[in-house]
Structures are given as C-alpha cells and as structure tokens.
Amino acid sequence: MDTPEGPVPRVQTRLTMRDKAVTAAVRCGIGRHQYAVAPGLYAVGHPDAGSDVLVTANFKLTFDHLRRELEGLNLWILVLDTKGVNVWCAAGKGTFATGELVHRVGDTGLDKIVDHKRLIVPQLGATGVSAKAVKAATGFRVIYGPIRASDIPKFLKNNRRTDPEMRQVTFGFMERLILTPVEVQIVLKPALITVLVLFLLSGIGPGIFSLGSAWARGLTAIGALVMGIVSGAVVTPMLLPYIPVREFALKGIITGCVSALALLVLHPAWTTGAASGLALVLFTITISSFLAMNFTGTTPFTSPSGVEKEMKRYIPVQLAGIVIAAGCWLYGAF
Image 1: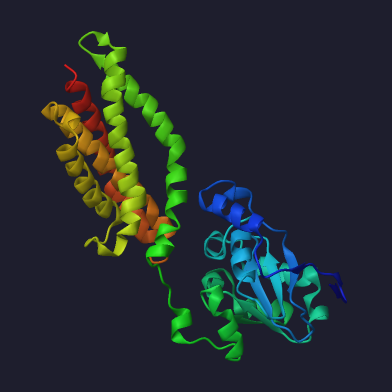
Image 2: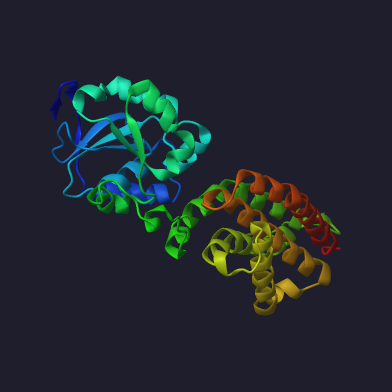
C-alpha cells in the first residue's frame, strides 16, 4: 500500500498451505536458521496514520504467529533485524534492542507515516529495549504489550492495557511438546557419530576385533542410545513439571533410570553379563541427563546463572558416566 514514505507491503492474516508446511519443517529443525523476513514496515488490513504499530522480530515463525492473530485489524508491523531469531532470544542476544529499534524507526520514516508516537513492543522483548532511550532518540513512547500474540486484539480493545493474565508466562504440555522435534533434530548428527563409535567399541574383544560382535553388541548399544535420546529429549520435557526435582539434569537422570530399568526387564540382551548391563544402564542415564539439561535453554523460567551453575555441577558427572559406561562395555566383552 502507498504511504508518504513510499509503498509498504501488505500481509495477509491467513497462513497459506505453504506457510503451514514450511512452519512444520522449521518446527522439526529443518531450515530454521534461514527462516526470516526482510526487516522494515508492513501493513495488516488497511491501516492509516492513526493505526497502532506493533514491533516484532524477523524470524518468520514469529512474524507468522503474530499476523495470524490480527484478523480484522488495521495495524502496522515494524520488523526489526534480529538475524532470524525470535523476540525473546534476540532480546537476550542484543539484536532485538534499543539501537535496532531506533534505527528501524528512522529508516522507515515512521514519524511521517503515523501521526501518533506509540510503539507496542512485546513483553518478552523488554529486556532488550530501553523505553527511555527510544523516547529520547525518536520521540516515540514504548508500550509493552502482552506476552502472547493471541492477546493483542483484547489488549488493543482495552485501550492498550494488559491484565494480569496477559503478563503471565505459560509453558504447558503442548508448548513443551511442540519443541521436542527440534530437540531431537539437534542431536541427530552427534548421534550418528556416536553410532560409529559404538560399533567400533562393540567389536573389541578377545580376538582383538570381531565384526560379528560389532554388529550384535553394537545394535544393543544403539538401543541404549535411542532410549537415552527419547528419555532426555522427549519424555523429560513432556513430564517436566511432574518430576519432583528442580535441576533438569537430575530430571533426566530419573527418567533415564526408569527407561533403563524398563529395558532391563523387557529386553533379555541387556542382562547378558553384569558389566555389559551396567554399561547400558549408565549410558542411557547419562545421555538422558545431558539432553534434559540441554532443554533448560528452551524454557521461559531458567536463568543464565542457574543454567551455568547446573552445567558446572553435572557435566563432570555426565563425563564420568560415559567413561565408566565405556569401560564396563569393553570389560563385558572379555
């Protein structure tokens, strides 16, 4: 659409089948680092000089999630260059930031397009944006909006006021579940390397190296690896609030123990020798613990200092678990 500063793209509020298909792929970790829209100003509906301006990141998943909630509204969307990162993470990384917002307001000529001085910034981006500095540099007043895009219509209807529910962060079952495909995808490449190492270790025995042992024992070890991945990257996130400990690494140890014990009962191959059985149990638990700890960066209620403290405490334990498991696995072959 035409504006005093030139044409501005108008975006639809309904996602196409292609949008949905690509979103599903990105949710599985495919192409997520290149999924971005061009920074700048966009129009939703038929905005005019009095329409509100929503500020967001240029991660397309975030952009699409925002626009689909704006059906029937006439608004401007000011997209910052966050290098394809979502609002919350970009605020922490310093790309959803005061300087970028000030630059984008000036670059788009926003003060010539709207006749008010309001910018609605998502609450999760508040750590990166100084309202005082933005006001001083641009004359625009920053209003911190709700956490969820779905609350924006109600927020605007309430004269840009939030209620306590709009400020409350949630991390329910579906919110956790939708993140697990990415958690699994992240570990696939290291897992493939681990598979090769497991085959090599499993072939070592009295005859120096046996292809038969590498295949037979290797498959059993891979079963432990898969169980550890499922336990740490899927089961732990799904059961997160129900596991009665605080540290994520310890949560992973608990789910890993349950998974390993279940396989000891259900899979006879796991009980052929105390050393080999112990190795499989330790391996499953360690993998589960590490991947569960990795999930801390995805949650909305962990702090960098808390994550660092947990890593310092549990990474040595996890390394010891891997070393002991490898030693027991080799010993079990003789």
